[in-house]
Image 1 (tube, one colour):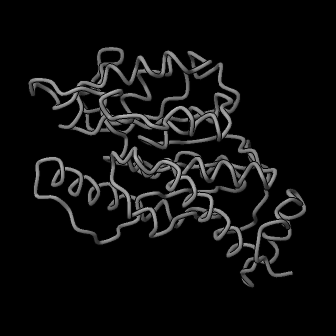
Image 2 (spheres, rainbow, N blue to C red; image 1 turned 90 degrees about the vertical axis):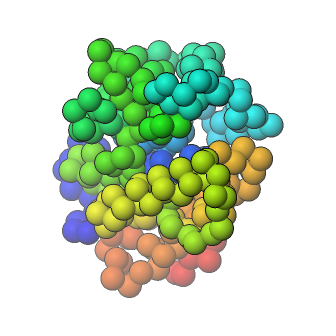
Image 3 (tube, rainbow, N blue to C red; image 1 turned 30 degrees about the vertical axis):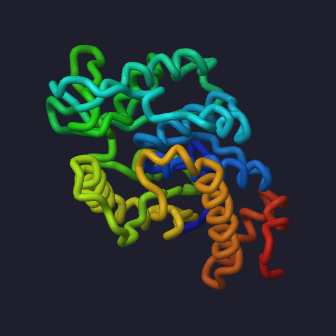
Length: 284
């Protein structure tokens, strides 16, 4: 991991993976970080991680984010269409963001944000850091085939998870310490043989395949098999997923601070954020 704090543009970076509704776990992580007094200096997000990161960077509290999605139905964000470029039209998702976001452009956010999407025309990743927010986040969340690509400046964009579901590499060189939240660890579970079930399973394998290099580049990695209990579009268990994220954050901090091989890094982090001592079960 190297020296935890060196002279880099940002002190704490937060990388948020995609994973559909499992991404509500990011909200639980935000809650834990707030309790520790840790405010990220920059956030990178892919797909649902981009959505959660945008809301956090826009100044929403964890409670407000939970409230935004409580008792929601999938049809409030997308509706089925005659299959053309995607099974679902996600224009309702854009209207939802336009209605609730305070900022309209990246430059107006309270925390610098990087949103990763995939250029479908050229087969490359793009990190958006400026310009309008809404369609960029929608593009990053647009799983191919399930959702229509989003046209931005004449280019078709889809889910950033095709190449970078866990966007640690986009901030690694700029940050002294990177906290990464991977909500898509693979957990074997039964799945439906329906079109939706097979698509969800297939994309989970695809997204999982490109996360390992980024997992290794985190200073503090937050993930748990508990995330695997939930489906990609599970809006019925938002509170449980948030709690799973909170618990995972506490456990990850405990591991980091009690790791004998990371004493110097842990000491530096505790000096910078003394509220970390409140993390339960931390060894003195």
